Image (tube, rainbow, N blue to C red; front, side, top):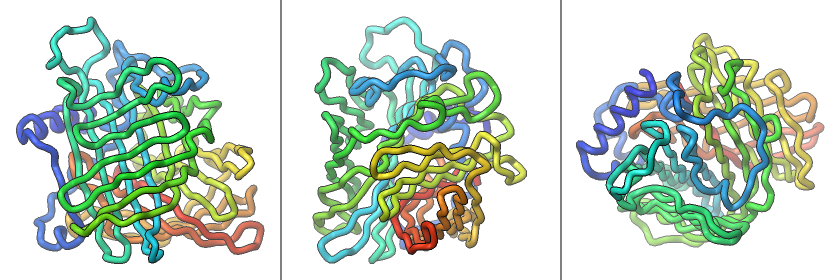
Amino acid sequence: MTERRIIVAACAAFFGAGFALGGCGPERDERAAATGAGVTGVRYLAGGEDAAGFARATEQRAFDFPADHGAHERFRTEWWYFTGNVFDDNEQHYGFELTIFRIALTAPGPIRESSLAASEVWMAHLTVTDTARRRFQVAERLSRGAAGLAGATPTGEPGEPVVVNVEDFAMRFSGDSVALEAADADFGIELTLAGLDRIVVQGDDGLDRKGPEPGNASFYFSAPRLRVEGEVRSAGRAPVAIEGTAWMDREWSTSALSPDIAGWDWFALQLDDGRDLMFYRLRGHDGSMSRFSGGSIADAAGNVTRLEAGSVELAPIREWTSRRTGVTYPVAWRITVPDQNLELGIRPRLDEQELDVSVRYWEGAVSVTGTAAGEPVGGVGYLELAGY
């Protein structure tokens, strides 16, 4: 399905329904009829072929804060991505995801005075993985960028907060921290994440090429080890205090993927030796790894090593098939980085961490075990599987 058809379908679903979509966990999936393969989300999230009138990511640029926490309206697509692993006082684990996507329907044009005029669709996803109760809970907000329903506040003087929201799902950037607040009927998060001063630029000094075509690239940076405090609410219970770590990814682009890319597998891992590893495998229609796959590994001192496609070996070791959609995902992996003397096993906290909303993908909390230079190493992380 092309990006334009996906956007039309998403807009029709939103304006036809008139409210945000929501979901719950495995118990719901046992009762629900299968929804079919649905929209994979690959072209929806990463751009298609028609880029006329939009800016393209073609040259390196310096990142500027707080401005780059806000929107980049000259580009067609961007996202704000937070995932985290947190624990309550009883050491019970929770995973969370809060992501906001901006998708422009038309290229920037003359400013229209009406507050109801909209040329963008905004989408947000909230998930909470409650490992002890084996619950995966999902909610979505989908809105047009008008009438205060969704958007990003314009940035002003340094130090002025930047607020990005889709209806009641919100991110508030202030200095070196960000507050996340999002809730559905039975679950939600209210968190403060600190550590935005430690930024890792991805790709070639922030320009991350994902194909040979000019402009098939994104501007991409991460905050790989944010300190999390706050509350998580799950399964209709009272909020519990938690602490842990989170990962932020920020990208914006106009057309990031080549036509021969079917999807991607993305790993964001925080190792207990202080290193943070990000790697994405761009996957061809035949399952092969594109030479434009890549990532980075950063140590606690801030030293960053770029990872090329050939420097990481990936092997799926277990699959899981969704009862809801019938789609099979490789949810457990072996990752080897020979130059870093790393051999890691990646396993999901729960198999069932599939989002089947306006777009469909698997994104969930994982645990990490393995060795670093022959010594035991562990960690936490998140895995995203798109295009299956």
